[in-house]
Image 1 (cartoon, helix red, strand yellow):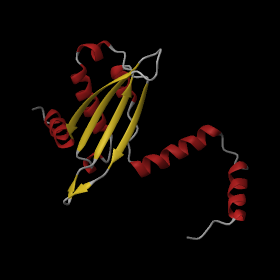
Image 2: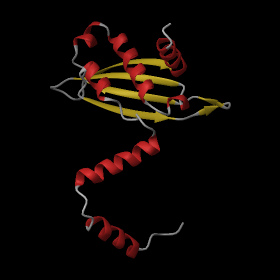
Image 3: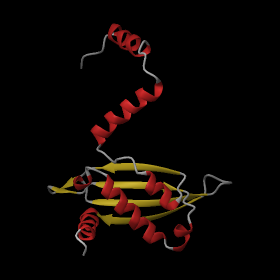
Length: 152
């Protein structure tokens, strides 16, 4: 494998540092590039975060093929939900999060399942936490989405 010459590294760093762009414009450009690579809607929408009043969200994706069949999984890890709906019907919140994510993510058809993980941490001891996991088939989410659009 060919090594990058230090002179190229120096030229790139001079170009980037001399750029008259402000940080916000550069960040928008990087996010645009990331969206083109990962797919539009890869980062969960504000609606998902607001649904459970979550403190933070992580997305993990994996693509596996077993006997030629797609076994790809998307995992949304939602931390410290505080909404009343979370306490009353966590299963419904999980289903709604999966539906919203499947509606917004442009490459959802490339995956077989969505796993929603609710993680509650102890504010006094970070080593104590509880995890609730719910798994949904992407084809079921897309089918229910299409039937809602058709008025069924």
